[in-house]
Image 1 (spheres, rainbow, N blue to C red):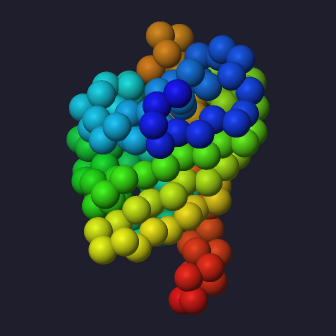
Image 2: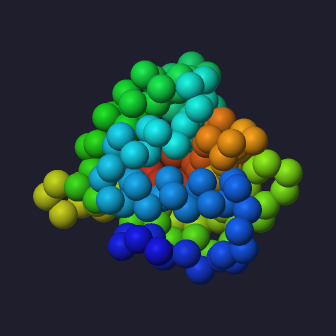
Length: 145
């Protein structure tokens, strides 16, 4: 697995699990175009699911242009990201992964986000959706906010 990705969950092949692992590896490698290429044209990202500072209306980031903007506003502001997943459950054309993503920012600040992330793929293995379930309030408590 790529540097920055610590996959402790099952490695059993499954199209959605494979896409999720590629997604993490490309983010860790800072490969924006490679990451965007994983997504279908009409894919959607909800990270986190529901309203947030990244998505005030809670409708998600739909389509490659919006997904590229999501990268710029979230992933792109970090110096690096590290992924650790301890569980992975695949069913149908989806997978749910449980773990922690640590975001490292300029100046040495970092934030660890505990989450459940789900990935759904089409028949060709392209990502149709990436949904991340995490709580902003938990982060605020963790960091004294």
